[in-house]
Image 1 (cartoon, rainbow, N blue to C red):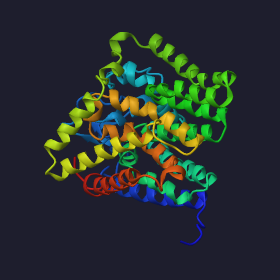
Image 2 (tube, rainbow, N blue to C red; image 1 turned 90 degrees about the vertical axis):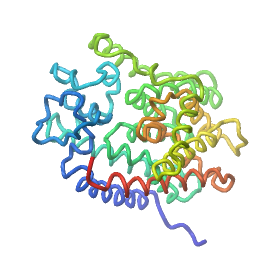
Image 3 (cartoon, rainbow, N blue to C red; image 1 turned 90 degrees about the horizontal axis):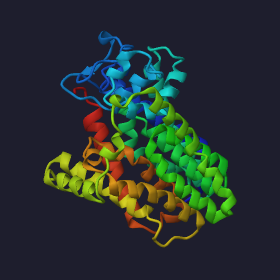
Length: 385
């Protein structure tokens, strides 16, 4: 092979082209030429009072998807209108995940017509940002930046973009945090982790793992930095508990947990039961690639250096979450693919140390890319419910 003349900037530019092209086609077809079509709003709950029914794409006889709740909070980040709470299935839980809707409100300058566009652009930018962060990290460790484009083959990237969930932003922050950790930038790492925790509370599972990594590298004095990531989350949650009464919804986190591996077992049985069909084959391949990615992230396997040990240490947090996830996550439509998107990103981040050593790695990347192609072609780019 000849020399690799690619650069992180060129790779990021190519990612911009791909993301913009696919998002534009989806806007014209799957979103029905209406930006609110990116949020998969159902008709089971009232519409946000800041949305005009005549100008909003609502999918009839459907419960909707998580994106509609992020949009509701973004349109009213203080939940000052009582109708905003009625439009949320669990106000206490949804309001805790404030980062993505708050950024949408800021980018949209608080204007209801601009906020949906801001959220979609934020997700598109996060997809490109993920590629850029991976490309820079790969280049610094002597690998081709072009390998970062594998991240656009992950199913969760497009599910998050087409349904406007916070997973792309969280994955970007977690990946940037791990990359900074590997590159000996603890403050940047802690800042990105703190923001990720404001995006989703499950990111808190990474805090003790970052603490262990800091202790192993620099001793006990360095462990105070990753612990600071908890402070913004704790302050915001204190405000949420004060602002919203318990009647606005119980803690849904416990509802999504289950005894170890029961959720995975249920998901595999469900996928195998429909395996002869294309949908069953898709579900089985996507789930199998997730399990293989989790196996690659285990920190107990042989490795070749401290960077890989740190990446796998962080990956172990997502492996633990996967093992404890219940059917409500793993059987939720493409839920596991977007929720565990950071686990797939860590697989790409570890490519400089693993790409010549594991057949499972290429199975993961191959299965994900094939599933993404099928998903984009047959589901999202076609008009209909």
